[in-house]
Length: 240
Image 1 (tube, rainbow, N blue to C red):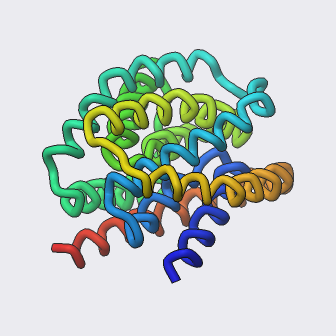
Image 2 (image 1 turned 45 degrees about the horizontal axis):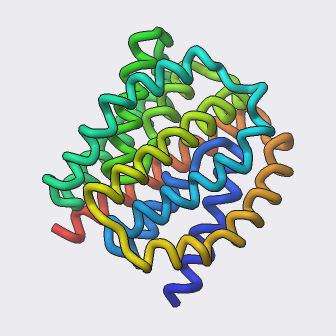
């Protein structure tokens, strides 16, 4: 049963990540927590997400906004240590509840057509939030997704810039997790089993990308954010 759940999680999340530039960690991490310990789920997500970003970086390099990417990276330098400290000090249930509430509130604002004016300072702040989310729960996507959606960023730029940022942030977060939290055999064996599924997802997702128009793309963003926020909130309440 657990093996079937693992296969479904990794395959669907890989297709979503490849076709949209987001979605793997947002979809995979909450559900991996059903079958793994928190640190294991986060590290498996980081490893497989890193593989996806590495495979795609050449194909999406022309879509990257390097100015925004640079500011995201600078902001994440502060966010990464904040995230790992948060992970080590706060109960996972409380962390999930807080993030779930934030995602739901911000998603509702986006659905109601709330808009954000992009600026260099906001780029830095979003990079910091994404960094802290990555090292604490392995989910850099929500801050980036909400920010880009609120500024009506074109889907190719969103995908290219987020995947380039993920390549750096996932590697840094994985190193920090291993150093400060530790790792085990389960993480690496499960990640190895997940690699073929990721490759299938890469193949399918790449072919879906050109078929997704901007309206459908935005709708997918909202649905994924709402599902993730509700799941994190409900799961934290069950644990409590």
